[in-house]
Length: 113
Image (cartoon, rainbow, N blue to C red; front, side, top):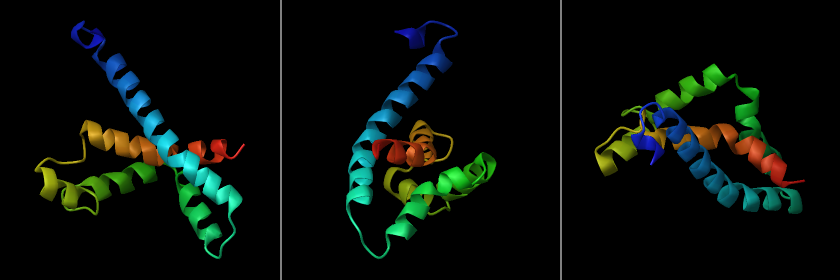
């Protein structure tokens, strides 16, 4: 309903993105955090480093890498374009993917406590 009121489009987009990202991160990060905190294996440090990578990279660098990966010729964007015929970059689904990747380390480490 708020999407139809002039001026509330960006607010509705933000709330929708936050809600979908939260649900996806709860479904992914809860088992990931449990698995990382309860198991011991040889490659655990490498997986923890990959999960923490968005914290280490500056936001502009992470955004640039995601933009390259989601382009129609990119690693994620190419298969997406072949399956759907739409681009992943500059779309709502691209926003959700980027938001989940950016928020993954915060949600995964918060689940450990």
